[in-house]
Length: 388
Length: 146
Image 1 (cartoon, rainbow over the protein chains, first blue to last red):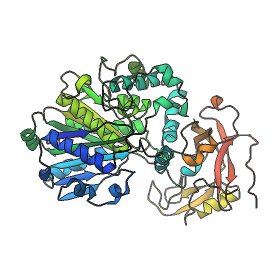
Image 2 (cartoon, helix red, strand yellow):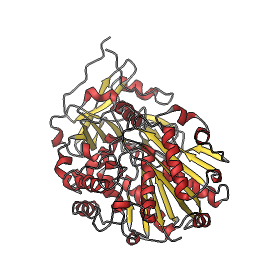
Image 3 (cartoon, each protein chain N blue to C red):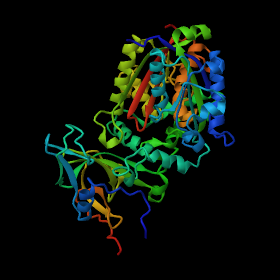
Image 4 (tube, each protein chain N blue to C red):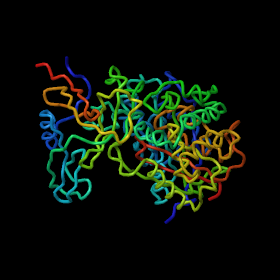
């Protein structure tokens, strides 16, 4: 059975991303959920399934079973947490799809809320270090950006990309973020700014690594028929694909990019569309080389060198050939952990509904959203469209 | 001075590894069911799911697969070590190991494929961490003070 066009996103919710010490995980989650219900035209009582995920910040949110439903005042048949790192929200979309198509849920609320912005940076970095094997990686000073840097270093060593090409992704994302009122950083930056910002871990400069942020996002998913009754323009899920390839970087039998390719092929096959059909690419970077490898694995560019040169020449920037990461992405909109992953789907939906304001792409029909977990070990692609 | 950084846990199936490391020997696992070498150590062979695993002595030599100089992003426990170099090494036994590179002269002159060899860093009475240095380097870590 194909899932193509059978479920839809009826609503979405988000809030300003950045450092907001006065917002708790619960408050953020409530706020974006109410917006998602409103944009879906759905009464809260109609939600029969709530999918949440970890906040990493508030114990009450992470440990209280059914806590979110209690706080917002919604009883459901089913409420539980899901976790697959930065790709948690994409895994939630897959589960919601299955629950809806199997008749086990009608209206599913997906919500993520995180507080990396106001958490002490050391605590967030230390949390991320737990992604790495406690016997074989952490004792050797491994951490998330470092492990990613180990893989990305090779692209520079073997001359596949230049520092300027890499930096241009940060510049492009910042141009989009300038038009996103919810983005954390909106002031223009130059390639020189990026290359002079120092290395977090070679070859990733400070301005090529995402700022940690507070944020939240929510989606309402339901059957295609329901969605058509609820809203003027449902956004249909045309295809979804995923791949898990490794957890620790030393154990990668296939590269992160090969994993992305598997997810992309999967999603395109289900959707029955190809790279040439994509009008908006909402790409979960979260580092410039992530954008480049996605452009290749999604079939949008031939290889890393061409992808790098294309971004350097503004191919993915406002006014370019194909709009890439139009909300500014993790790099400029801000990395609000799991909710940051969900925001790529939110942005694709917003663009397809024609509600993206100043950064609205003209009449998009089909958009894609991607997500990554851990150090690039899990890869997800969703293809969305305005026709089922 | 007490060592305060994260330490590997010694498990029933890794005690032999850490005991050998304390003697200055690097071990890798070997699966007798499918005749492959394995790293990091498992309870079950990740390839054939066999359970007949034993340790063999490795040469301690290999080639740099990749490496990264950590300047600003280290986790709190490793802040004081910045800048330091993390690396992946392809051991002569055909397995890949994550570690730290030490004893190098010019980071920017390093190339993937460079010959490296293990150098053990004794950090507690039970744990000596296998780190790597350019082949032929005379770099050593100080012995633990009793």
